[in-house]
Image 1: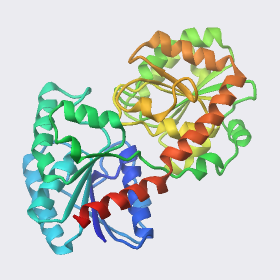
Image 2: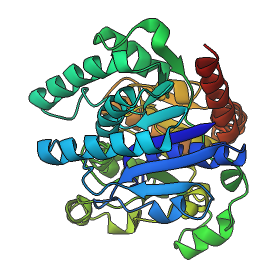
Image 3: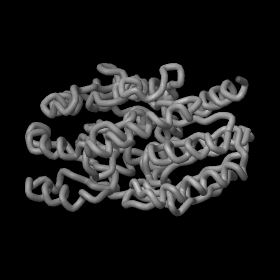
Image 4: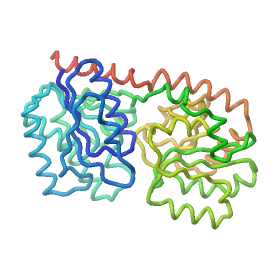
Length: 384
């Protein structure tokens, strides 16, 4: 097949990693792959280097931006339409809200045989203004008829989209977001060595997060809980993986609480380092307030760590509640703290949940499982 993937920007993030693994896996199966994206602007870090060198083509449309910019959006549409008419793909597969709308419009105009869109996270849920929410909901409703199949990374995305009047039930398919599993099982740097590098001792219980230091990622809730948790658990340490614009504010608050010695902030790290850093944890907390299905959850379970997360969007589909971790009612800080304290105080429970979690994540989130599911979906669409 000749396949074109379109995504707004190749920054460090779950949707982008998902897209790159899809491209790599489909190219390995012998398909002709082209990835079209906007420039990787923003503080999150770029995945452009990770996209290059795997044999498929990568093209950048400089006018494609995440923000709503009518002139640039119109120019992007025209460029996408021109390129799709030149490439003449069998399948166009769009990712993220902006590229999903513009890319599907261009694909329909270019009369592409199969048009697929993946919802990694809904643009019209919590976290943006009512005006922007309304605009994106309207546009998603308009774009749905241009789409042959809408892929969701969790069933929660399907339910929320249908409740909002986006598309028809038969258009939807759930394909969990895949990832490279081996580095989390056998990280390049072992747990003991990395903990020593980080200044962690064997007695320390490490509560980790993998998320941008940004609004709605839940770091505020962890900071609110930190004084009480640190008093109850003298050996507790926090390991925050990720960079972002809120780091200076978080560092100031940590300093004001007198907890500088309890926190390790790695800053932005290359994705290849995430497995070894996850291996250094004992527990992962993910109290984000907006997600599709957080990749941090299966990543931690692949590393054999129990997880605690709020029950928002698709997160409850990323673990087995009570067996591989805990799903906490949305934004219930007290319950979040209780589950963290429970795991911190029970070595055997952490080990049991970690073992079950690894088996669960391998069966649901391996990259090849995702690539195989997409292969079948494309074939079914083109056979009709």
